Amino acid sequence: MSLDQAKLFIEKMKSDEIFSKRVLAIEDVAGRLVYIESEGIDCTEAEIKEVSGELSDEELEAASGGSKSHYGIRFC
Image (cartoon, rainbow, N blue to C red; front, side):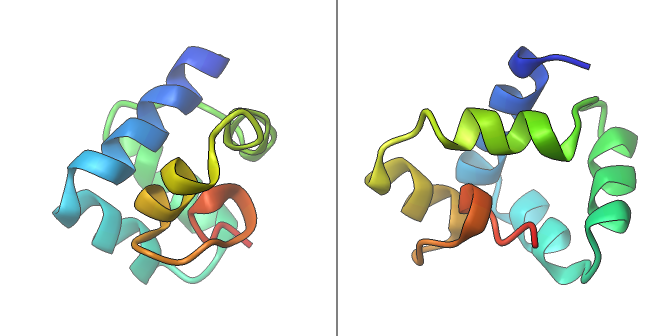
């Protein structure tokens, strides 16, 4: 688990529409973490939150599909 993996997750949310839709379709945080781990990304909710805090508003909007939200990816 690392911040690098959390950054990779944010980048994949921005660049891979199918991945992003699949993540956002899962309603609970634990389920989302299981799914992203199955995709080869190993990070925690806290790491995602920390990395999201480093992003600009525009980057958060891009990662969340056009609307600002907690963690930039509607994780809660």
